[in-house]
Length: 175
Length: 175
DNA sequence: CTAGATGCAAACGTTTTGCACCCCG
DNA sequence: CGGGGTGCAAAACGTTTGCATCTAG
Image (tube, rainbow over all chains, first blue to last red; front, top):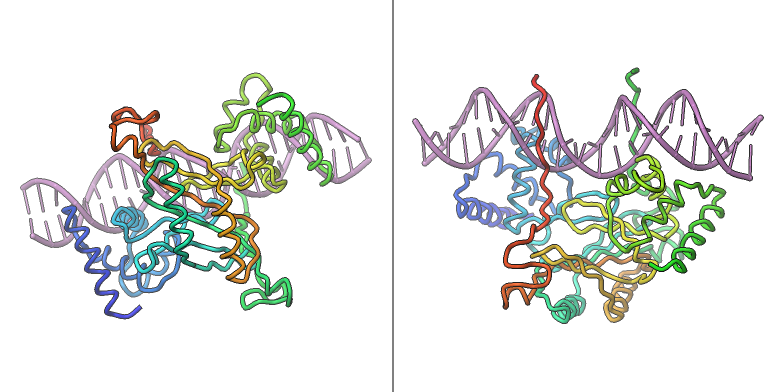
């Protein structure tokens, strides 16, 4: 992300905090910068190690509390890609209507937008007697290239960990 | 749910377990019965108290393990309605393509189906070079009736708990 | 007999909280 | 100096696991 956009985003965050009578501390600034510098989905826990280094560490509690505020501000959105995993998506600022396709082979996440789907969702919602406030479409799918050719750019002939989250058991303390 | 359908579902479950060389124990039968007897979304934890009584208790571990199997069998589906909440939906057996609309006012969940949306999702998925395996559309919306008339069948003039999940702090053990 | 199933309690990863302290206006 | 902010560690939560035991075939 260019410096230009980041500046704008920092300004937007600052304005939001100010509008609620809250302060825009250096921790919050560091967080916003980290979150919106690249376009990756992230779990709150992921941010902790990334803040250990340069910008000065930010505590877990502050991270969680700030994320909540950013979601409230509309700058950040919680998404769920299955398995009870709670991710945050900073890309709704740039494309407010995007959806997610998850490849079941390699777990790649593809963001896409489609005006027709969007119109249709609004249509259905109104037909049901509601006004839409937020929509989330998640498609799980398998890669045709992989099936036909045996490989795709993300999945090379079975070499890719499918990303099944497995908990590693550790040595147990005896009773 | 009528006895007829329940019988069919029990049979389907039994067949699935058998096909995998697994047993259809009385705990599993009790669970399947409980899950598919009504059409409610549920959290695994919800099932524990409901099994304390009549049918003989089933342990937490068994509940979680069985749910995993039922999901694998395709009879049960994991859904996510936001807030990191992990719910299971037993209604995909009857309507395999349904989606969810959540009222932001009263948190009521409305299941709906729409062939056009479905076709369109397939279309987009193929255009991206994939074959759809599963789709989840979640719409959050506010109730028009409530906004215009001040009440709806679920939300009576602010009397309804919005269902915001709040953790209740307990007495702390001193350090 | 034996592979699968169960229950228990411990452990896990994540998120929230109480509280003391800090910082800034 | 006062209200919001932070960090820490503990607690709460939902889920998974090891293991001893049971059970069905």
